[in-house]
Length: 424
Image (cartoon, rainbow, N blue to C red):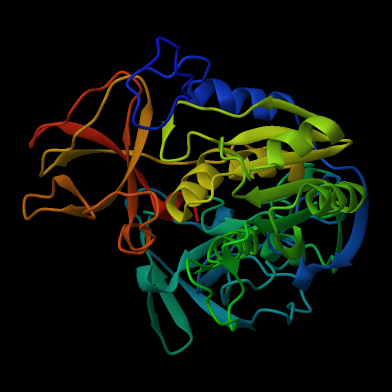
């Protein structure tokens, strides 16, 4: 027995983890360290969903392009409307359908039957809904309930020619695509997609289809990351599995940095003897931090290799998903060039069970949220919460976010839920 001091390292089970960043501080540092990619391309509108606008979309036309009827009814000159308390009979001199304007001006004292979207004829300025008149034998009977200008959509009422309809940095939604199409525009200028390289590290990691060696595991992390990244507007580069060999890691990181805007790895960022990622990063670039007060996912590295941004995620599958959605995703959205603040809704839900929690770290419990018969939102965990239990993510529909200073949650207490539907 000796009196020598034993050197230890902090781990996820520690109550206090000195030298680590809080979750919100880590994310703020990541966002502050990154900027949007440069470069752009012109692409067909049909391929532009989820792409990021490089420049504003300006309307070349009025929308609608002509003054038209908002309903099926009868076009009339407002001066022919009956006075208060009066009723009137007027002859119907013809019908107008959308796409076929009436060749003549409307004569005073008459009306024209008109369909929704049809151009308002000269001499008319009001449309009466067909349900609000009596129509028989070419004559309509109407009362005094009507007002001048009703049921008419003016040219340019939705969009004026020359106006900005979508701003630079807008991520294009299906509604945006339809809006641009309504202008007669078939191409858009969008930001180039960030090049995102992923690879896994570890001698124990095997590709699908390989025979598992004793102690080996199949690589699920690359598939998880690729599936998540494929939902974004990025150019994905998959470099496979890299062995725990310093020189191989040096070569891989150097190559990735030359061809990528973002590098994401899983594994190799803890304090094991064979974990070389942090050491290699220090030689090739810089590590801004590599510990965060989060569970799961405390050993998460962030830094730069040349111009490329680096995320070193943990090796455990659930920790990879938690750190991806809490750190990588919002940072990537900034790098993609999105200027609108992404909406990540949360709900206050009642826990139906006891959830153990130590203060001093933010915990992301995989949970199932649902509404009880009274309409109140409730939540329970998916069971065992080990960071290697990927089934806990598959069975969940939300993260239960247990704040940094919070302690054990008792049944009936309110917790914050972050639905997956707002992330994925």
